Length: 449
Image (cartoon, rainbow, N blue to C red; front, side, top):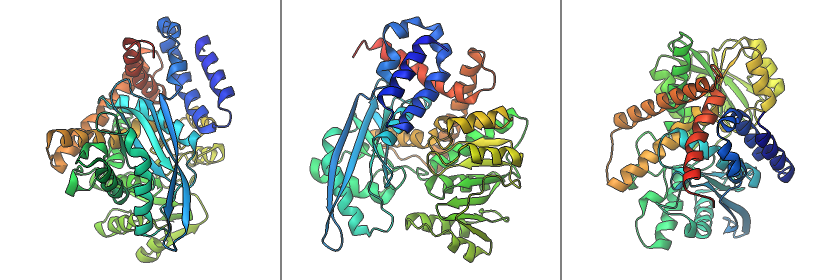
């Protein structure tokens, strides 16, 4: 490996040993781009990788709110504006009890290269809080969001930093956040947040966009293998916006999701989650932040497996982890390999450990990386920004077609980057290189800061 790359990885490991998620993603990206560093010694002279591994700024702030019993609650909020070399900072807000600085930094670092892959002028950022909306009333969620935005609003704006939704932050939370921002600013800067409701500047198909984009990327992988999506069975972890979008688009293209998991277990619906009634039921669960997948099994007469994961089932064609980070480790990877399933599409951010990815690939499983597969969500968020700035409203068909074109372009750029550096069909390295190259060039041309 390139000596400079080794040096930076060692530095990050030592300095941030208490931030494992951040260390893992830096190591994975920088290992992939070693050939680029060999070809560009000027990057080492500018200490580019060391600069790129440090966020431009990160905020940590107290969020105090009152629950329905009149008791004061205190949470921690974060915003990591990681890299703005190619445009305003852009990235979601995550409300979940496991949010910490390591998680926010790894997501911001990944977001930088993901946003670069879209071809759109947006930098990388991420934020959130250890607040969990599950089990909270609408009034409690509103009060929390208002307090969170009161701490954050000074540091964001349409040309500065544009947050969006993520886990635990849907259109309801975005609405409360935007309402408080508008109250504090005294104007209607609807380009400051994306994922808004259609009544005040949201984009059609935004809730489904990440899932739709993942299926479009999957189509390109299947085409490369001389295969087709029609008739394929898919196992998806999670049942939030992303998984819901995967289910909808898969059904439209003649495939079906037959396994779906949550924190309490998984369901197996052999008939497929592909009817309006089933999809609406999943949507209702998501809106309620419900963790009760058994209710789906009871309603539609299928099996529910409590406190279990489906990794290893062999009656599907494709695995799509779409829940959260680090859900597939070496034990799950071994089960996947034994199942004989050929395609593994990472959809959530860093769902797979480095060891598990290596094992899957060594055993012939085609692995596609999340920063490419799930880029459709932020891509449509950027399209929402364009519609807001130009006072436009595209049809669902127009947005969907732009998304499909974007995902094909991301796939093509990733494949081209891998082949230019003699790496063959390595979609992981290709995505890392393609995302890195644009950010690196912009940083070099803007001087040292």
